[in-house]
Length: 527
Image 1 (cartoon, helix red, strand yellow):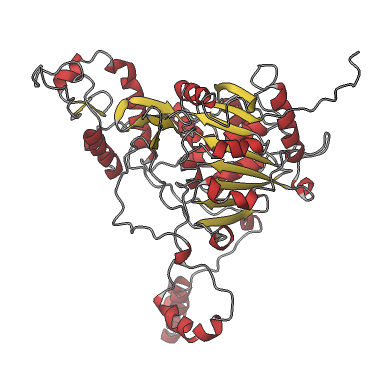
Image 2 (cartoon, one colour):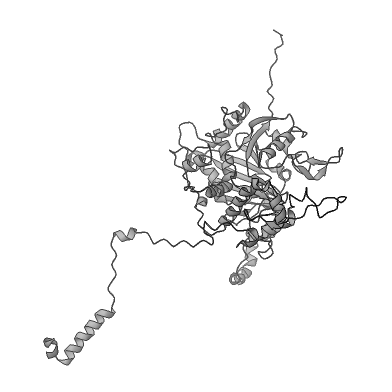
């Protein structure tokens, strides 16, 4: 301090300025070599709207408008189950008319009865109340905003690891899916993957449908052997993409497609990852097939540029326009919920992939094609099968082609066709407006036809109808005998017109093919 005081005033100011400069100028930041490989800090996950212990809500008090709207739809469609036998509010000579449901069960949250009195009087409600509560919580969980890790699908399979098709649990483990910690996660994942994995479990060489458990017939063994020669490489060779270079595409025609056509392409890619040495082309054909959203209109900033180039663009190939697909309603005009009454509604338009191309010029009907990966191409056609039959009629090959129909409803009455003899509705398998003209054409190809059903009764109903349809009865061989599908959805689907009606998507599976009649040479001499 004494030394500083003896300095001249100018020197003291210089020392103070240097000291203040050292305080203002920040030191240079250094970065070590190893910090270059350090990962960036992960973004914090958003907080879910509902916690896992707060998933149960009555439909009318749900925080999600879609669930509230579904409750209102059920109240307008479903009838009270108790009113059918107790109608004190109607005279004896009048025809009994059950009242619509209005009371929500406090245990499951669904509108199930017309009043609390009838809810207490219904002794059968306890049989399905727990299932309804399970569905209630599942629907709220899907909208809760939590990270759905069960929807994070794995990539390519290790060539040294075999996949087991015994059941969902073993499949998820051998296929390296994220751990399914709860039954709810298993239900969500099984509903998402039931369509592609059902196909894969039937076609794969490690399928659980075998001659030993009598699900596979000798005729079916020959049909699947032909398909597997295209799906898999030669014995002892690795299953890699390089092995598919000289192979033809495996064409899978999914007829009567509805919800399966609205699945994102990366979900269907899980089918191709089961067969690394095969190429796939999926055809969704049906009047309820989902089409992509129309292309986005050009922005206002590019309008002036495109106007000046109109003359030169007229001589060049035009890009697809919104006219290639039917116009869709705006978001404001779409209902919050569409009730599922007897016939599933047409799924909403799917997201438009960057590789989506219109195929209306090729097929002459509203259609699109997505070359999603080198291994997978998807084509959707919004039409009936007979409208595009001429495009494929002479190209079917039992080694590369097969048909799949998910819950086609062969045994249900036709809503449009009536028998001229009895005056009653025809079965859909006989109706000329539904499956009547289609199945004989499919059997004539000699390609395998696989069918699923949503319940044991549905499978039995469809199988029995096969013996009644002209051109079908006696004209097919069994490929897979009717039975339970190990890869059906584990989630209950509840009917809006009656909450007591519950089914599981793709509960059962069976398969047929056109009958083959071998020609035998008869000897001239009868020895």
